Length: 229
Ligand SMILES: [Zn+2]
Image: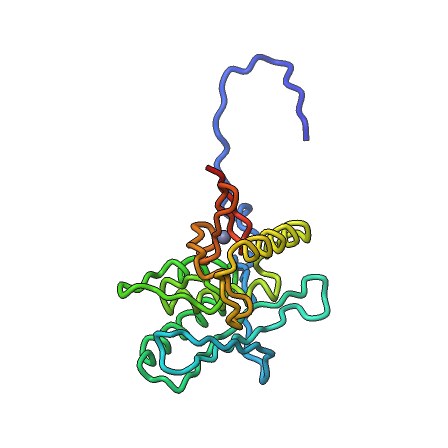
């Protein structure tokens, strides 16, 4: 309501709040809004099992990551990792491996962005030194290799973008490799398919022993990183 004031204002006072009028009859309770849906574990989950054979363990390890499908059948359908199990005949790492799987599973179930786990695990360095996996990839520790498996899985279900090498880059690398091997006949033909030339050196970018030097340029046959001197 508007009131036109035609006289001079000579005084004013602040209107006191009417205690009865201010209180709406039945005030709705201010309940906090739950942003996370409560998820009960379904009776079955789909999962993937990865096998790793780290030289620091006597037997192979089987890493199973189970996923849960959220908002199934809607536009917001998404696949999220839900739990991780590690199985092995080897018992020497049993204690901390179980602890790690429980903590990682708990982080998975919390929801939200879980991709930070990959960086955390992959940057764990074994004070005894790491090891080379088949194919020349350096693993700084067993924990890091478990992190690499989780990364592979998160890439497979689309939570981490995988930077696919272009077909052109792949072809150039294959050509470079063939050329290098032809000019270094000493490179033996042991049937280690997928391995890089034996005298290849470490790549600082992808941690793979795949760097060869050709025409004054150090080129990584794994990721394509190249430096010319
Ligand atoms: Zn590289």
